[in-house]
Length: 116
Image (cartoon, rainbow, N blue to C red; front, side, top):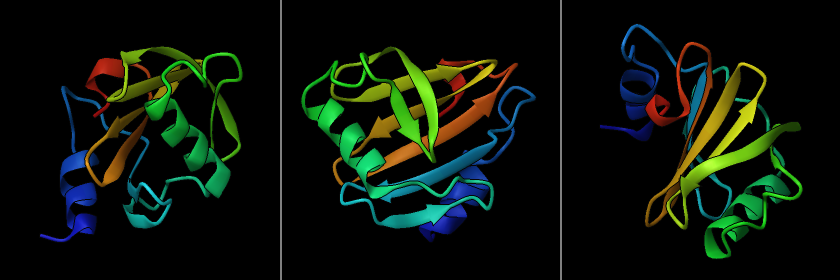
C-alpha cells in the first residue's frame, strides 16, 4: 500500500459519521509523503516548530501552532507523541511516529481525540 492510499482510504475515511477536512503524512524533515487535496500549503519552519515541540514539549503553547499560515491554540496532548491545536469549531491533531508526522485537520462535530 502506498502512503497516498493510506491517506485517502484510512485517514480521510468516515469516523463515527465524520470525515477529516484534510490529512497528510510528512517526514520529520518536512518532506511530504502523502496528503489529501485539501491539505494546506505549509512552510518548512512550521514543521520545524512542530518537531521542536515534540523534543521540548510546551514550546508551542505561548505562540500557538501554525500550519499553512493558520494559527491554532495548543490544547491537551501527549508530551513527545501528540500535539493538538484548536481554532474556532475545528482543529488539528499531529501524531509523531519514528519517521513521520501524521496530521489531521478537522471541523466540528469531530473532536480532537478522534481526529487521527
